[in-house]
Every structure is written in structure tokens, then in C-alpha cells.
Image (cartoon, rainbow, N blue to C red; front, side, top):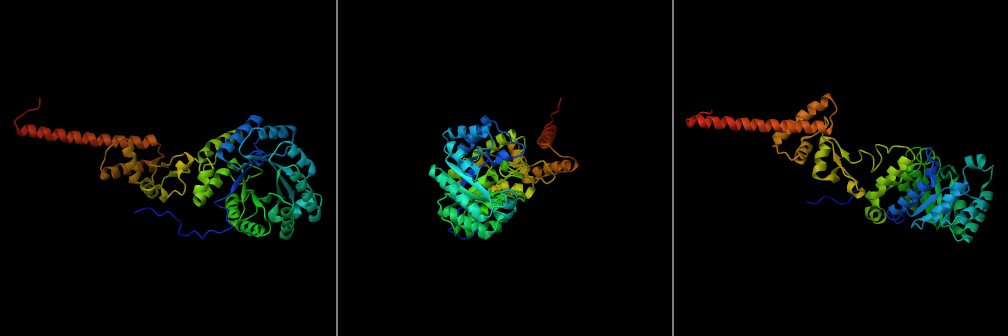
Length: 418
């Protein structure tokens, strides 16, 4: 009997949903540079850009060239690499920034301006929405005149007035932007809020919708998925989620979330087997460890320990795995050295060691392993030693039994052992 292939609880596809048709704007070289430990050399930026390009991201977003002379030089260098991914830079919504960005040779400019009352008062000197809209339209017109893609994003979108948001988004959409952006700048949004705002916006603009989620409250991945369900087209990510404060939607975690929903699309577009090498490289560069519970690459992401789980995994991995480790160039590990160990996994280990035991014997040696695991943690070598010692005892016992039977037969035949 074949295993079920569909999700019986899946809802009918929404015509506006883009979970099977989305693009990634990879911001490790922009948002990621705002991470507390980040200090990329030019060589490191080239390496990260090249790896992400080989992975298959659609866009690479780099730091505003106005930030420093080196930032501008690095942006120009990346633009000349001839990568398949389009090169973007993230700037303030000013003509000055836009001119320098376009001069650097980028494919597109991502402009942003604050629209919440908090930012308008404390960052923009009290500007009202009329002035902000006028400024945005002037910058958009200039960038378009330079032949570059343009995305306009509000900042702190989820603490901005909805009427203000829809008004400015309609204006910039009519002005011909390629994308409008929604930014959860402080990570306050919930998936339901995200869905409602994106779905509302989808009915107000004709352009693409980009989303940018911070992870202060742990919702970045869920929010990104919810946004795609509601009709967003582009998601901002960074490797391991590094960025300002707690960072943004992690690239690998987003891939993990998208695989159950859009496996064929993801596999056709992205080189998933590169995720671990990319994360390892970035982690080393910013001097952090990959979290133990990181989706896909956490050290125990594909480790199974409980006896019931282990038995099922050995019979059919899909029983307790929604992701296949082989899709990411990884392998699963079935834990067999704890007090939770079941005899089925010990039987598998015995087979791996090239030994032969009956089921009753496997259960007996399993009891020995569990008894020792109750006393102290066991390493693989400890469990293997118990298995091998038990097997040796079995063989010695069989040998002695055989010798005793042979001696008895000899005595019956009148033979005496010298």
C-alpha cells in the first residue's frame, strides 16, 4: 500500500497566493551588514555574493553606497561580477542617494522612507504624508529616468496609519514603480495582520509586492509565508537571519517552510545543497555558531531519538520527517545510545556492525544499553562496545555448548579427550 501523498487538510489554492511563485531578495550584504558582529571585507562580500548567486537567489541587495567610500567601491565591484542575480542597493528616499546608487551601476534601487508617527516625528523632522508622497514621487521619477528598477517601501509599515499607507502606495504604483515594499521594521506584526495588510494592498496596486520582516517576536518566517499566501511576490532574507537586532527572515528557514508547500518550484529554482556551506561560511565570518535548532542545518535537525520515532523512521522516514535530508545534501541520524532507545534501532545498529542476533537477543542487549544509559550518558562507542561484548558472550556460550555436546558424544563412543 502506497503512502499518502497529499495533505488532507490543505485548502483549495487561492488565486492570489504566490507560495508556488515567489522571488528572493537576499539581503545578507545589506541587512546582514547591520548585524552587530558584521565587518565584511571586499573579498568576503564577493564570496557571499557568488555563493548566493550560485544558490539561485533572484536579487542581491547591498548597503547604500552613500554609507562610506568602501561601501560604494564594494557595490561597484559586485555590479561588475556579471552575476545572474540582479544587484540592488537600499537607499534613503532622496535624489542624492538615488543618483549615487544609479551611478554605481546597479540594476535597481530600493528606496525607503518612514511613515509611522514614530518615525515621522523622530526621524523625519515632523514631515507630513503630503510632503513624503511628493518626495517619493520625485525620487521614483528620477530612478526610472536612469533606467533602473525601483522599489518604494514604507518603513515601520505595521505601525503606520492604514489610510496613509494605501494612499502613498496607490500614488507610487500609478507612478510606475516595479515593487512596493511592506516593512515590519520592529518585528511587531503577526501572521494574521500580515495577511490582512498584504491582501488589502494587493487590491490597491498593480505592481509586485515585496515584504521585509524583522524577527524580534519570532514571527519572521511565518509572516513571510502568510504574506505570500496573501499575494506578495518577493521576500527579503539574510543568511541565518542576521541583521539589525534579532535580524530578519532567514534564507534557510524560509526554504524549509516553502518545501512542504512548493517542493517542485523550490527544487527547480534553488540549489538547496548549498545552504549548509553558505551558512557555515557566513557564521564563521560573523563569529557565531549555527543554532542547534536551526531549520535544516541545526546539528539535530534530522536526529531521531525516541524509540517509537526511531522504529517508524527506519520503516518510512516520512512518518516523522516533513523535510528530506537528502534534498539538502544531508543525512539523518537515528539516536541509539539513550534510555529512550527502542530495540528496533538497536537491531538496525547490529546489522550495521555486521553482527547477527535473534530478536530476543536484540531485546536483551537493548535492555543492557538502557540500563547503562540510566547511569550516565553514552557515546556511540559505548553502545557499540556493549553490543559487541554481548555478541561475543553469545558466541562463546554457543562454542562452549557445542564443545560440551561434542565431549558427551565422544564419551558415548568410548573416546577419551587427551
